[in-house]
Image 1 (cartoon, rainbow, N blue to C red):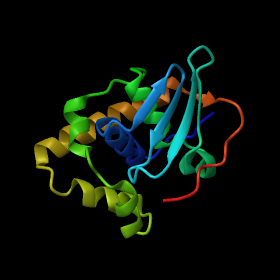
Image 2: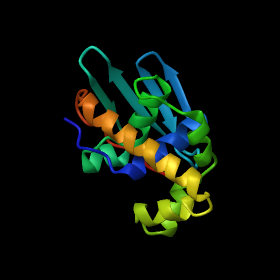
Image 3: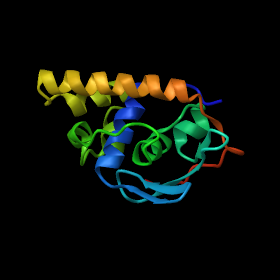
Image 4: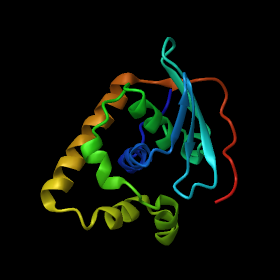
Length: 152
């Protein structure tokens, strides 16, 4: 079974969907990184309630990474709200995460700092609802883990 993802990965997934960085063909997808220089592969099997992604978080940490979450959002398994996803459009996640030495919480605060209080509260509430939905899905791992792509 997948471990629960940190909420930062849900924000990142919302940004990936808002940016149109997914190419989906049935139960298979490519999710391009925010730099656009590499992509992650996602496979999903609705019948067995299983998903696999070859992103770093999924491979190294064992929790559902942002590409898999983005796939679930884009495919309607999780409810996507484009009005809230648009707040995260165009974010250079990789650059910002590196700037904060992969302190994802600090990077997220930097990303969200300019949102007004009402928008921030609405976005945070939505992300927490998505986290609850992910827990309820209780997804298992589809096949063996696949090594993430290298590069920036």
